[in-house]
Image (cartoon, rainbow, N blue to C red):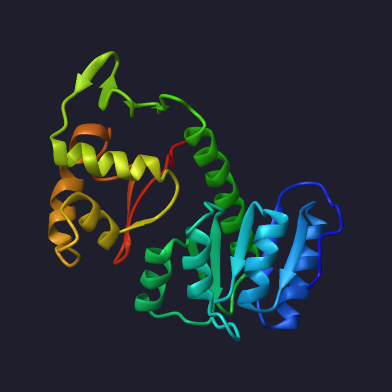
Length: 240
């Protein structure tokens, strides 16, 4: 295992059994001012996370010993660290399984370094935002178009309350509490409708359309409530 070298910036754990990828990531990220910790196995990844408390984990799924999927499950038992999966497995089932387990994003190999770095920047930014929300006693999310008060369970625009049904509110709340993260269809269905649900994606399409009609300025081109086709939904301000 290679420990960090004291560079400023975020601490990033890179987990991959390919030495060339670990070295390339280490050189690139350290050149950008980040501290880098590397691990070649799932066991090393868990040890490094406990020791170094990284701000982000870049994780391969095909690891010797403990698999990357098992690492995600283990980390989510005690940590909210953002996890970006970097894997040669490019089928939707693998992606959904990793996201359901708690990964924040998924990049397939071979990959563009520029794209991966953009995903890393985004995940780090979302991690800081989530920490800010978690540290707020009564979190209020203010956008250019509406304000969501999680403590008072209400949404307002220009001081006027926008009335949501209980189901609409539950969906909005779950997405907002996971601001910036992809929430899978299965997670939303089981959280809002119950553990017996998971395939009724038409429910989500109907209710998300209603939410956009009420909250988005242009429901056909949403700024806040975004669909990740075939996977789930994300609350993220993509406006100017």
